[in-house]
Length: 184
Image (cartoon, rainbow, N blue to C red; front, side, top):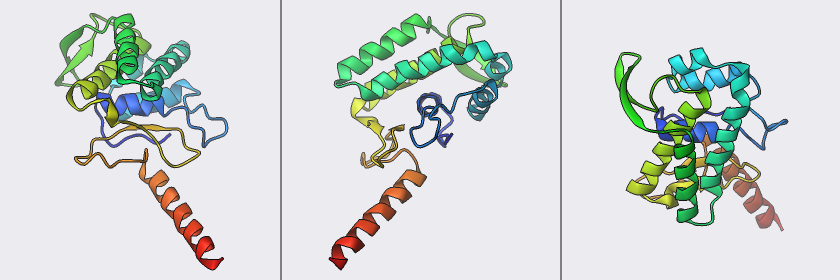
């Protein structure tokens, strides 16, 4: 499981979606509560990680699949509709609360299920990206067979890969292809 450097709601959404990785066998990377805890603690969601139980895995995977639809959508309007529905279903009403000694938004009053907490944080973060930067910032990794996603935060909208590993792999494949073509 490759986790994004950014530890915000956008990074959480990307990290969660990328827990299904076609480059691995099996592709399911969210196969235990321990793996879920790694993800949650990476994003400094210690309180949510403390509540995570094995029964949370299936609902969190369903959230992941619903988030993925926003990246696979054919049009921006479809992505917005999917994310709005996810946020609404999770009861994502923002509340400013103290989290690990810092003020942070939580989405929903009181203790929420792990899946609803992740759905609210992730869906709202992706909706903010669409509002502020546009849906064209959502991307699918160009390094086949990788099917991971990313949100392009670059100034010039130049990102094409989900991570440096895929960028390096694609660069090496292109170099090998050029060498073969030159040898013919």
